Amino acid sequence: MLKRLLFKIHRWAGVALALVMVLWLASGLVIVYAGSLPASRGEQLAHGQTLAPEEGWLSLGEAWQRSAEARKIRNGGTAVLEGRLTRVDGQPVWQVEDERGQRFALSAIDGAVLNFSGPQAERIAQAWLGQSADVAQVRFVDTQPAYSSLRNYTALKPFHRVAVDDGAGTEVLVSARSGDVLQVANRWERGLFLAGNWLHMFRFLDGLGLEDSRRDVLTWAGGLAFAAGLSGLIVGWLVWRPGWGGRATYSQGRTQPYRAFWFRWHFWSGLIGGTVAVLWAFSGYLVNNPFQLFSAATASRDEVARYYDRQLPEVAAQWRPAPWPRPAVPASWN
Image (cartoon, rainbow, N blue to C red; front, side):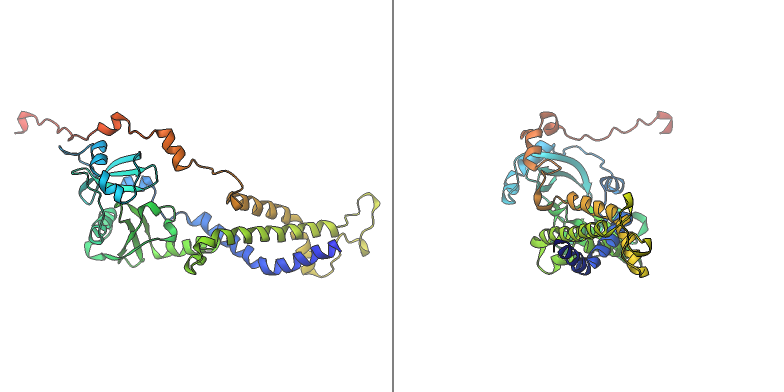
């Protein structure tokens, strides 16, 4: 009775979930080989504007104090976890992250909390592209609250989309909150991302208004797919009769009960490759921490804030940039 039930579970679960497993495999391969769309910190530094410090710029501590009221309106925190000085669209900016994960762009001139507009996003994108794009080819398109490829950048939303008329459909995504260029991708690269992440992570559910339930749906689908594969592996071991120790085999000395080619192929490929496939699927299932069974792999915001202390170190708070010294010109050159 139990054996028959196991056969039925494997048969019908396999019919229902085989397509899901194939799509997961194909989309996972796309993710591995297509690469990541968001720009790395190294790329941002390589394309960043030259800082060229000047007299009168505020220190991080001064900019943080002057922006206190404006940050309070945005429900910002009180401790600085990270601060870096950059030049965005020609103006010096302190890029700051607080203990709540909120991101602020603070003017190094007067400490104001900055927002970057669509026309500014055009200029930022043009500066990133440099000589590879003519000014007339770069145009602001719209502002979006979220992009699936920037799901780890919610603290920097909304995002300005800037199109580059280069024939490849290149688009540049710029944070309206920090002025950072977060993504530069052409039509082909975005298509690969959709083919991978959109299917692999069930991102299509976001468009159906099921964003909050997507993780649960993905967890249950992965669990059922693993159960279907495991049931098939158990069935294979149960019906396999290798004849060891003089035990009986099937007619004509066969070690499995199937005569037709496709049935034999399914049996042997499932029995040999099934162990690897099931362990592989199960490891991928555990990586996503189903039902939050394991503790978080990274420290929480509160833990990081306690580690750094809530007070900005004096040397960091008071450091201010100074103009670069100009090399002396020999008198003979004058």
